Image (tube, rainbow, N blue to C red; front, side, top):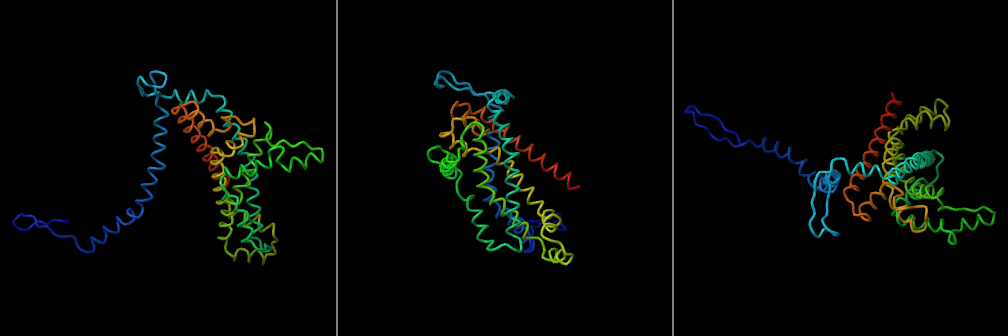
Length: 315
């Protein structure tokens, strides 16, 4: 509502016009539509992060064996982070995942790019069927996928091990030097199709005029891929690589399931497993929160560094 002054100095109330009402409704309409998402986003994403950060700077002291004599909470500073960094198993798990990411992400990106280019090629037959077939593993939960693959890894159950024995080759998919790559195989099998669809979507945005111009110039399949398709799908390649880098540090279900059949996998084999063990096996939630923050920081640094590197090369 607005007000205006009369000649006698009094104030007269003037109702807002219909145009002003419509303008106000238009201002609030987007927020009303976004409200359900924003509420869920705050309570399921932002708030847990803030709580985890707060707990990572908190020290909880329990009086008595089970805290029956009282529990006191205080500011711990960076003590929880120092304790997390002093855990050699946690540091080793981060290094293990860095090696895992360098090899697995590279192999997976090459595979999904090749599959996308082949399925979108002019000679592709029934591309819709093969896109769905390659994407299907992504729809299988990680726990189920790991159980299925474990039948091919466990001696006595695996036909691959039996076939190798016929040829005098001893295969050990769950040994200390091979189990990491057995996990990498499961992850590659599950996520290659998902990343492939992102690249396929980017390929479909390339105008047909570009292909026709290349055809007129006499360009073959490889020159088209090298000079047209790969440069134009670069944003999709960067996006899927960043997602894969973040996913590498989040590895949890696959090693946890294989832990029961592989002695080489301990309770702190990956960073997430280490934080989980610290929280629920050692009941030290504050150090676990510090580990979680450190994992997020490493993921951010790697993703940011990769984006900076790719942007510098593009310039």
